[in-house]
Image 1 (cartoon, rainbow, N blue to C red):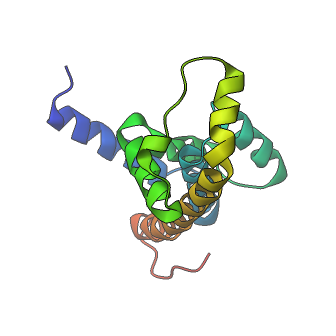
Image 2: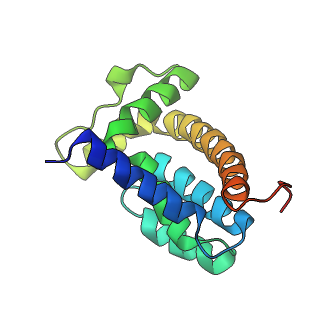
Length: 150
């Protein structure tokens, strides 16, 4: 069983690895921000493919992007759903997956889906932008640089 001390060591080790990746601070921060966006926005299991497609179009650090997607884990999912519901005025009770067919899921989400996706896009974008600026400063600080320009 993972103790809190082991969890803390593991988390600090992952952060240290992220900050010391061999790429520019901009590429690391952009990759992480893209990963955060993909991690929060509902990609229905296609997040890895989206990252690969975006990597072909843009220069960012893919390992940093993959680490960024971890923000979409089950522990934080309720936070992103709640924030989206607050932003859009959707009742959290409306965000239930029907347990029947794919068609019923489409009908159910057809009623509130677009509103939810637009709101979640806003939340995902805001958190991704904030993570970019936080991480670029952290990478510069970790590498001992005095200026924060890329």
